[in-house]
Every structure is written in structure tokens, then in C-alpha cells.
Length: 196
Image 1 (spheres, helix red, strand yellow):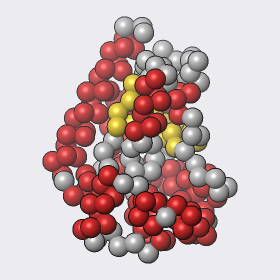
Image 2 (tube, rainbow, N blue to C red):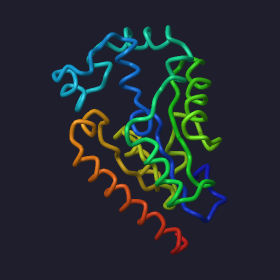
Image 3 (spheres, rainbow, N blue to C red):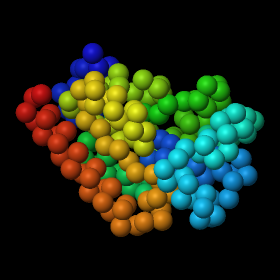
């Protein structure tokens, strides 16, 4: 059963890190990784950041930065436009940030500050079990294929947002990403109209 059962209107959930906010830029800064290096960028198109620096080293640096790491996340070049599009299509009351926190307690308060600063909203949910929000009239936009797959398995509609570095380096792909998302938005809104 989905957490969001009471509304008949479609709902959109956008992941924060890698979809709206530049988690990679912040992680690279605290871990001393040069994201202007073409080899690093291409590696990160298809690999995770912890594959580049090591999981233990990465989390040690992020946790040492504390709340500031999360509070200082900046929107990706398209982040605010993506948020505005979601609100335009689904309405302010049906547009949410749905983000997985790290295990460090400073993550929640820092992400909250970042969301409120840039998105000016209180519509956010934190948790790793995003699939609990899945139903035919909910759309998840996420950069994690695993989370996309689980959301779909539980009856939701999901759109895989491409790697942020890849999109920054390939502007035509960004246009395609927005077009693909708009097609998913139409699908979810149609399902809601049909009373699914």
C-alpha cells in the first residue's frame, strides 16, 4: 500500500541529489576531486563517486563537513527550472522533494535547509524506501536506477534522470531529458483523469 493514498490528483516526487542539487560538485569539493578533469567526468558518467574515491573516504569527508555539506548544496543548472515545471504541471501541493538521507544526523537538517533556501517549500519527504510512495498516479524522478525499478515494481510511474555531469557536458541530452520527463508527466496525469 502506498503512503500517498488519500489524494485522487497526481503527485510528483523529485529526488534532490543529482536531479535538483549538485551533490557531485559538493562531494568533489570535500574529497579533493577535480571535476574539470575530463577523465574524472567521463568515469563518473557511468560509475558512482565512491568508485572513484572509495566509499569509506567519501563518507568520512562528507560527515566531517557536517550539516554545511548538505546545506550548501547548490541547484544544478536546470534544477530550479525542473522544480518550476513540476509545480506548473502538478501544482504546488502535489510537488514534493523525496530524498534519501545519509546515516549521519546532520544530513537531514542540512538537506532541509537547502530545500527551503532554494525551493521555498515545505513539501519534502526523507527516506530511502521511496517505493512506499508508489501508485499509478505518482511519478518519481530519480537518478538511481535501483530506486526507479523498485518504484515501478510497486505500481508507480518513474523517470530515470540522466547523470548530471553527462547532461552538463551534452546540452542536447538535457533537452531530451526534459521531453522524456514531460511524456511521463502526461502519462501520470492521464491515469489520474481515468481514475486509476
